[in-house]
Image (cartoon, rainbow, N blue to C red; front, top):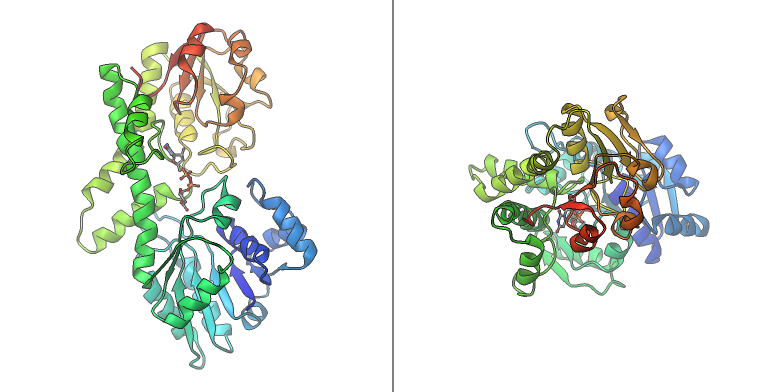
Amino acid sequence: MNILVVGVGYVGTTTALLFAELGWKVTGFDTDIHKIQALKEGNLPFFEPGLDTLLDKHVQLGNLSFTTDSAQAIRGHHVIFICVGTPSQADGSTNLTYVQKVAEMIGDDMESYKLIVMKSTVPIGTHKKVCQWITDAQQVHLPFDVVSNPEFLREGSAVHDCFHPDRIVIGSDSETAAQQVSMLYKSIASPLVMTNPTTAEMIKYASNAFLATKISYMNELARLCDQVDVSISTVAQGMGLDPRIGRSFLRAGIGYGGSCFPKDVLSLLHTAQDYGIDLNLIRSVVEVNNTQCQYFIKRIRSKLGILRGKRIAILGLSFKPGTDDMREAPALAIIKELLGCGSFLKVHDPVAKLPDGLKTHAIKQYDTIEETLLSVHAVILCTEWSDYVKGDWKAWSHLLKLPYLFDGRNVLDRSQLESWGLNYTGIGNG
Ligand code: UDX
């Protein structure tokens, strides 16, 4: 079976490389000619550790090719993965335009049976719509199956997550189609969850919303911890040892961002609303996340007083380390708030670049951490890149004009920093 991956963005490129590495012949299709050209030349259009090496290898070996010719791509492949974007609309619902276009393209160009696999995160119930769009676009009736196979990889560790997934979820109404998809993953030893398409779609949203809930839960408790002089990190440690709770995703901070959690949680709320269900808990998860940066700014103001005219260093722009992705990054919310207060910002990130829309005379990005920290009244850590966590804070403390350090990710060693004369403030540690 040869595989066509439609949409070579983040998920599509990673999926294509996974299957190339597993020994399948893969073609990546996209309408964006620049993206396709870059990939043909072995250049990733985004930053992801380890993926560039895989791309180079499989382009050289000829296991992975790229095209912008849709008709030829669809005719030449038996298995088609849909990996196009599903952005949020203003009301929180999901824009399925790209998915619909691909479904119609497949229906229009197919000349034999196709096994279509949905990787894009799509609202619960989309499977039925995709089948209908394909059928409507067909000139003559030809059989096909649409299987839901959601993706759970994390940015920054995409390569590891792809080859060692916690589970592979396959949702299909046809047992044969489900077996064929599971065959593609045969060399990966991860638990398989075989179910129907709607349940597979639900598993994806339920997982992301649960992880977001864990974060907002800790962020909300962190606010109480600040009042009662308790460290939320120690609370997390004490909680996490209970295997029923688990250690992960209990780190309080300035909130979750990225291309998935914010969008998926809103989409789940929206879908539920369509069915007349008000997901109160999930609504609160969004509310806590939306106000967490303001809460942090309040803490900063309580230490620094007036923010107007203060020079502040921002360490980290991306929504988390290991990626240049700034979509819904809490750092951007903090930057906007501080610029609005009249602060002057010196910004650093090892990979991400300040978006054009934020560039004003009051903000500048620097290449080195030292330049960024020089003569500032305060430092705010927004992304826990190891360059910052393992940095030489003893030396850096001498560069600052005032010693205020605000740790938006609760990752720095407070007592050590205080021994070097820094005035440390985290989130949820009194
Ligand atoms: C997430 C899911 O983890 C992944 O399974 C899904 O496929 C896509 O969405 P990703 O967005 O890459 O992955 O990032 P993740 O590592 O989950 O972090 C999301 C956000 O939560 C980040 O902003 C991170 O800083 C924040 N976070 C995470 C916390 O604030 N506290 C934590 O304890 C963990």
